Amino acid sequence: MDDRYSRHTRFSKIGQSGQEKIREKHVLLIGAGALGSSCAEMLVRAGIGRLTIVDRDYVEWSNLQRQQLYTEVDAENQIPKAIAAKTRLSEINRDVIIHERLEETNAATIEEQITGADLIIDATDNFETRMLINDAAQKWRIPWIYGACTGSHGLTYTIIPGETPCLACLLGKIPSGGDTCDTAGIISPSVQMVTAHQVSEAFKILVEDFDALRKKVVFFDLWHNQYTSLKVERLKNPECLSCSPEASYPYLDARLSSKTAVLCGRDTVQIRPLPGVSIDRNRLKSKLSQLTSKIRSNEYLLQVEIEDTRMVIFKDNRVLIHGTKDINKAKALYNRYISG
Ligand SMILES: [Zn+2]
Image (cartoon, rainbow, N blue to C red; front, top):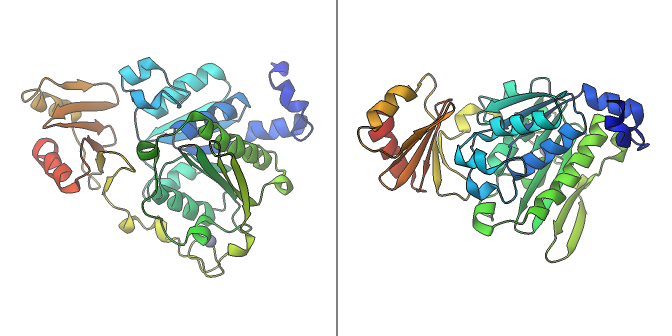
């Protein structure tokens, strides 16, 4: 076992004491898609003490090209990513404590998710969640590392509360539009390039070598051979609602987060039930099986194909309606088949 981390301890910037610090730390990873898979594998191999993985989705065939933790069996069985990731990661390093959370990160869940975390790594695919992470990180003074990629390009930035400009300082408000993996495609080296930066920064934070942190936003395009880093220190906004002394953390206000949303770049609408509403999946399954034979379920979710759409009902009562971007249509289907 002593040999296990020898290549880390021989690396002078980590050493024995750095490795012991890594062992004591808890990282919260939000998202277990491509960025999340790659970060999680590196952190678990590095011997992180605890890793909490939050993800709301399950493994699909189109994920396998780049989401390195998952297998064909996971896609065939529609295993939730948080569960499949934990299974694979526990085979890689049994000493790491892994908490899997099959749920969303939203204003109602984030406080519990970040409890005890020394660092947050962003592996999401949308700015709504990133702004929420940004506010939570500022409020509870936890460093976080932003990462994003589509096509052949990517972007990453390390945010230290009280020191660096925050994401709201840089962006102002949630940007609209833009490419996503689903519209622009992606090559897996873009993922690995972002996570190489994210996890290097994570190691510096975990071993408490803060002076070594990169203060710049990094942008690259692997196909067009571009690599740029931008100084952003001067963008710190003294009146920022997320990081100034007068911060009100607007994205942590649950009233502002939408209950129903079209998922980023996908032909999918997600419906979150009202608080207190719970769906009895067994009863629903027997009801719907009278209408269609295209019904499947596992321990975590129930899937039914009906009216040219595919509905997936999760344990936490969220429903994904695949095959439409029309919120009204999705709500009508939900009312007709699920809540009715
Ligand atoms: Zn700010």
